[in-house]
Length: 149
Image (cartoon, rainbow, N blue to C red):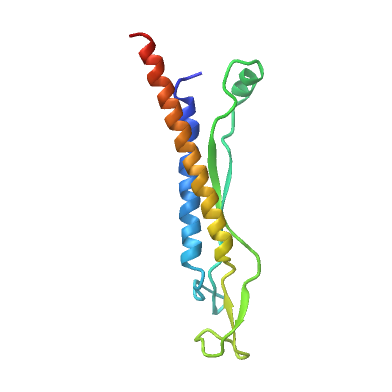
């Protein structure tokens, strides 16, 4: 096992969580955007986006070594896609809005700002936890180097 394996795992998580925070920020910024795309001759509201993460795939030899007790268990995480949430949009009655239909209803984005804030807090805490793990690894390396003095 390499000494930098812990750093590699935490760095992949930091990158993924930073992207997650960026996507959440975009969702919050577009929570009122009613003209995000033009589809079938009409404007569509912004659709909430979500980050999909999965573990980094391991090779057969690394899984075999892991099962035999010769290597670390984790390899890190990667973002596989950013997908749209297909929950229905909200209809809000506002006949003075420029995008209101003939009945006075406006299609609003499917973004729930409270849910996004909870997701943002979770992503921030995950990010902080990985920074703490990197700092702990760094402190262990420094202490190991001090042993030889």
